[in-house]
Image 1 (cartoon, rainbow, N blue to C red):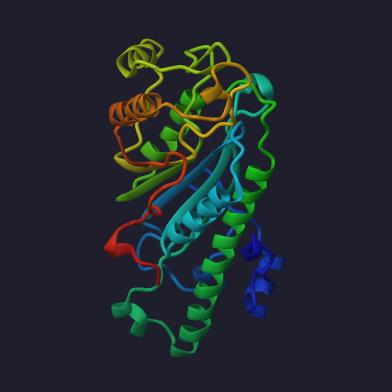
Image 2: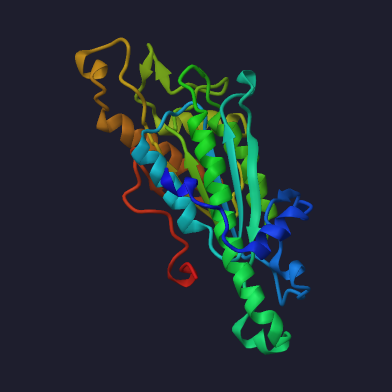
Length: 297
């Protein structure tokens, strides 16, 4: 993870700003990123962000280096100017690994091109430099939090309350009034809680998506993600079984089991006002994206 070993910032002005910065609130969350508008005494010309990007990491899933790198690359791609980001982790409340926010902050939207003439000319270049450093700092702060969470994952955790974590975080999506919302879930998608278990006889079972959705509805476990785009890295990713057939012991994954698992999460997110764009089994074929209108500046 060489990117995380780089110097966080090169601009002395931004480092000085960090030294005297008091963490502020961002829609109820701690905003760990200093505001370039406040530092340069410039009034924002509109909302400071129009995108919400959330990363949730299942602490029961051990990812290999390639999958961890894909998570970090996804973060780098999705944290654009104008993004409120949240990095969190979860497992099961009974194991002390409940949903926990690790990092959050705002990479601010720049001054609109047609408004540059309305600020003092001596403030233009310092502001632009600050914004560039701010974006780098926000990205690396988010990457570091995600990397540490993935390194802290453990196969000794038996339960995974994925449904509860999804329902809890969905309130953030519902409450954040922005036009662009995306969720990256780092999980195998294998629920193991008091609601239901996707395991049987110490191995993954072939679930019936309709039956599992009935359990979800009976326990009021759907949420409202406000139309967010959802991506999953690590789907059905688990070590070889300890008991079972030779194929199971060798780590063979039944395509039908994977298909039904993906169908369940497709149905779950649809019922929760979200769109499951990609379900990596375990890797995504392409990185998450905001689309052509939000390319990195």
